[in-house]
Amino acid sequence: MKPMRTRYNKLGLATTKPGSILKKHIPVKTNQWEETIPGFLEADTLAHCGNCVAGMFAYSINCVDIATGWSAQRAVWGKGERGVMAAIWSIEESLPFPILGFDCDNGPEFLNWHLYRHLSKRKQPIQFTR
Image (tube, rainbow, N blue to C red):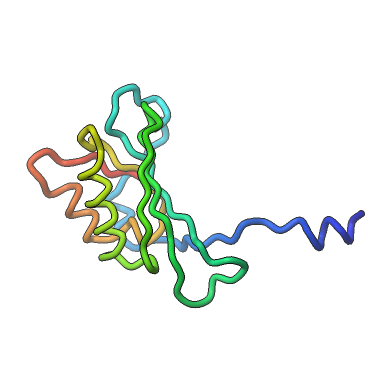
């Protein structure tokens, strides 16, 4: 059985690489599952790359509201800051509630100055955590 398990027991491919120096500006949140009001989103990306992460391919940007389970997805080509930012704007406009908090992983598609400014430099800043 060991040869068969070794041959067919493949894990998913990870495409998230550590973010930048911006990490010191974005706190780590440890109680994100305790939110009870709508507006606190958990964001992640899903690579549509098959068996190989080389080259360019599509990603899904997934945002899920922790309190309600409401989810929204957008497809982007690559994980560039501008494409991801446009997807997040589109998701924000489509939600039936305002975003109060945005929690993400440490990938550079989320930990970048474009998104940091978009969430924190507004009249009602959005809590940005990782």
